[in-house]
Length: 118
Image 1 (cartoon, rainbow, N blue to C red):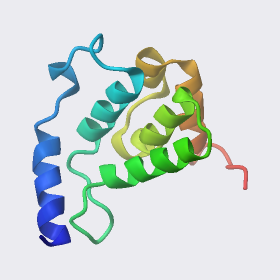
Image 2 (image 1 turned 90 degrees about the horizontal axis):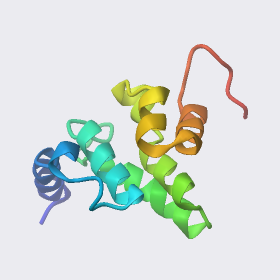
Image 3 (image 1 turned 180 degrees about the horizontal axis):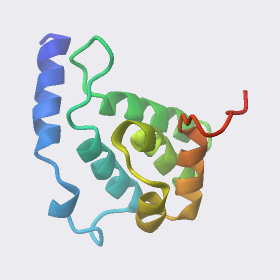
Image 4 (image 1 turned 30 degrees about the horizontal axis):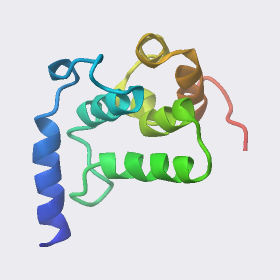
């Protein structure tokens, strides 16, 4: 099966996922963040490819976990582009995933208002 076909299948399945369809009490925080990220990025693909953007977020979270990330850091890795790409606010992230996750994501987000550390 080609990468394009696989990417299209994943994207179709991803578009059926809604964070409102799954009770947060049933999901771990990481699972809730995964559903949230998949829903927010559902129409987004990797630049110049049909590969769903969620693949990048999973790779980043995997790298973080392989290097000792705790739960908040792994969740932030999943959500690291949601503020700049999907207009999610820091306040929304704080309410859903806590202040530590929101602070990490805000620190990873590109912004015209502040310089980033190298």
